[in-house]
Length: 109
Image (cartoon, rainbow, N blue to C red; front, side, top):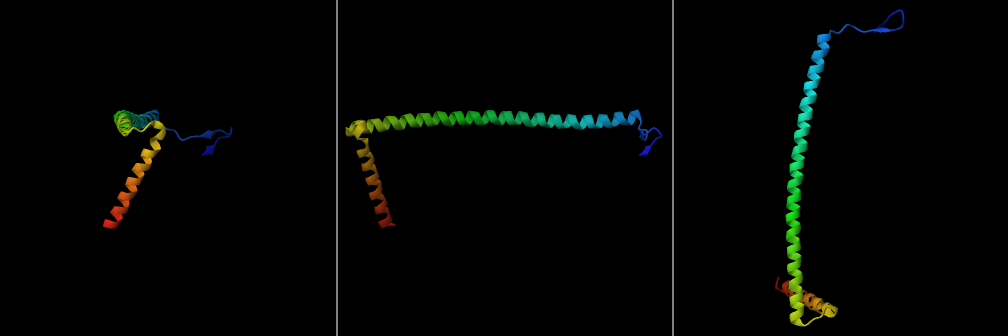
């Protein structure tokens, strides 16, 4: 750039129409990018809602399974006459049966 006698810089003359054309093209590019971001954010929101729905369904199923297992365990304890204080005997029995089954499986294999 060439400096004038007063120390100010001189720019080459750029026409008003050229600046407006540049601004219009930049504005159009920005609008496209904003529309793309809007579309992506809408898709993310829809995906998040879908995942939330799936997680709620899984949570409901887990609650149902938990209550079923709890009631089954209580019925087995009641049938066997085992109180809550002595439930560890039942656990030992189950572990023993699993251990014997594992040993037999190893021998058969």
